[in-house]
Image (cartoon, rainbow, N blue to C red; front, side, top):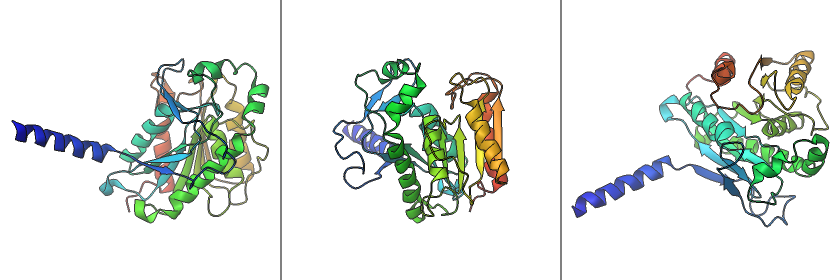
Length: 294
């Protein structure tokens, strides 16, 4: 009986280790620009968004999700969840995406970037109370947005620098972001250096209003853009702008503007065509050659 119990404990321990994900701190010590932040990251599962969110992020991290070695394509994607720079929708716009990508042989790195400090234990309710005045919300977010973009750049640099240990090709590292994460994605895309240039980008219902520079770089990466026409925050024109700007610059771009879906659909299932946007992303990656096992 004791042997059986011991064996069960050992098996459970092995399973827990095998399912554990590596968490990488992006900076040694305090992140530049937020050295005086003293609050700690928290999680909220019961909220008006009906999904788990992370808030009060002061120490940016990457959580690593790797595919089975036999499926590995060498492609990697950094995923930036959304949440109006106040929260991070960590499941629907982060972990669920990472798991889907893993099944396709893509290494995924879920980014927790710095966000505005929440003053209550209900960050979603707090945020919703601010959503009626975007000008005021943008002003509150303004000091944080450059820090979040810096985290996005640092994430790309980290993955490229450590590509060999993760079985990743240094020229197949993408950046995907949802809503505010799309702001981070495009903020990186408009302002990268060779070290942190994403090889492809996927802004999903991105918000461009918080960005000053929207100039398409001369070596702009291919872009896959998704939005719902009925986006209730009015972000559809932002995705159209990315598409038309990429076209005008004669850069590779694909746009999916769904009739219905609202804002923040992520990996949620609503029994409408937006449920399959991630499949279309898979089609696009295949056409680009990013899903070839190497």
